[in-house]
Length: 294
Image 1 (tube, rainbow, N blue to C red):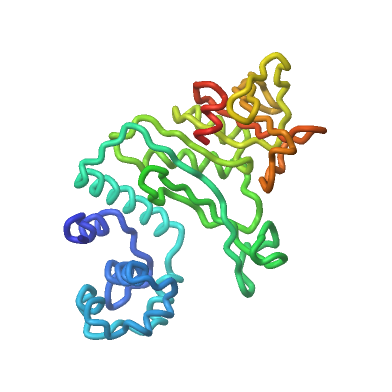
Image 2: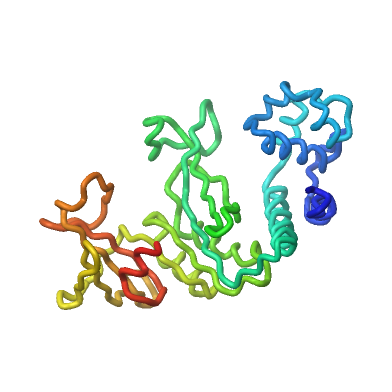
């Protein structure tokens, strides 16, 4: 498979080697880490269990794998430059694999979200924040972007353990185009309320992307005569320019009666009888279709 997709050739073209030069070379060190993930292990320490495995040693062309600490020292030597080069490598391999599969989509959907990586010990940048599985513990908060259609990781950033700033979201969105094959013309970006802001909206508009972001920061004035019923819920839309935004945008809303909510977790705009889910979008179509797609 690695030969089929030309992995070693693309690696040599895109990877930027760190200062540390191990005996195996950068290619086989990275390939060893990838092999660990392919097999199903999650930590470098698990190399101890496969040091003499015939398949892994055969692929890496050694009689026995280096000690685990060798892989750790190499991993620690990697920096931002290697992170960017691995993203370029991923984009190049994506083009090759899609071409081999004759997969030539004109439109893709990118889902963007943050997660919490709990840390144990004094890790630089860790903070106490939203961590439902380990309440009160410090963590990092990486942002991750995935392709909906193929479930591929597109790009992302390791971050401090604090809520992402809108400028960071915009920087991430501006990376999407160069990570995608040339056949892709239309990109649809989806994110929750953590990503709404003028910087992220402007980045999508500048790049020519469609977008839908959840809303938790502004209260658009939806017209009373604009409500309509579809299925179990009411829907509405308006054009609204929040404070600090350079132009008005389309906001759509779903209104849910509180007695219909059940166990739904909807910490959004609230009123006496209803809970509202509000989104900002430049996507066309009736509000219920936009929200259902989201």
